Amino acid sequence: MSYETLEIENAGGVARIWLNRPDVRNAMNATLIAELAAAIDAANADESIRVIMLGGRGKGFCAGADLKWMGGARDMSAEENRADTGNLAAVMRRLYDGPKPSVARIHGACFAGGMGLATACDIAIASADARFCLSEVRIGLIPAMISPYVIKAIGEHNARRYMLSAEVFDAAEAFRIGLVSDLAPTEELDARVEAMLGHLLNASPQAIDATKQLIRSVSGRRIDDALTHETAERIARARTTEDAAEGIASFFEKRKPRWAQ
Image (cartoon, rainbow, N blue to C red; front, side, top):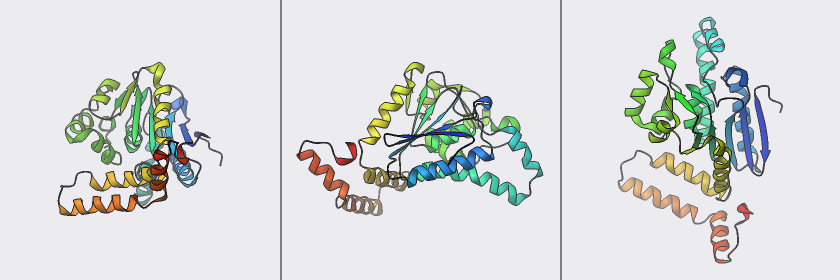
C-alpha cells in the first residue's frame, strides 16, 4: 500500500512508521489518521514484524490535529462528527491494545493529539529538545480522546495541571511526571530508540502479547483472591506455550531462542 502522509520502513522485525507531513509539524488530518490505522493494522498482521516504532519526519513528532481539518467539523452532522473523531480514538486503541510492542520516538513538538499517540505507545523515548503541551483548552476544545492514555501515564494530579493550564513543558518535566520512559540527548535519540527496539526483539512475541494483556488486566485493581487466582492462571497458561518451552531450552543449551536469532 502506498501512503500520502506516512513513510513506512519495514526491516529487521521492526515497522518504522513515520508521520510525514513536516510542513505542518505532522499535524493529523483525516487522511493521516486513516493511513495510520491501516499501517498499524498491517504491522500487526505481518508475522515478520515484531515491534512498531512511531516517529515524525521534520522538526517535530506531532503538533496535534490539523486545525484546518478540525475547522470543518462545524459543517458536519453530529453523526459525521462522531465518526470522524472516533477514527483517531481507534488509532490510539490499536497501539495500546495491539499484540506488538510500540515505541514512540519523540523530538520537537509533541502537542495535543501527539501526546495521545505517545502515551498510547508502550514506551516513549524523547530527545532533550522535545516540548509538550495539552493545548486544547486554548482553542475551546477538550483533550477527550487522548485523556485515558495521558492520565494513565502522568496521573490525575499532573493531568489537572497540564490539561487545564495548556502550558508548554520541556522533556525533563515530561520524564519527571512519567509521560516519557526515557530521555536522551538530542544527538543520541536514534541510538537510544534502537537500543530499546533491540531489547524488545530479544523478547518472546507470545510473552510480549500476554504481558501487555496482563498489565491491562492488573493495573489499578485491588489485590484480592480473584486477582491472585487470575495471575496464577495466566502464568500456568504461559508455562505451556511453545515460546516458554523454547526459551527454557535455549537457556539450558546456552543459545539464543529462535525469536532472537
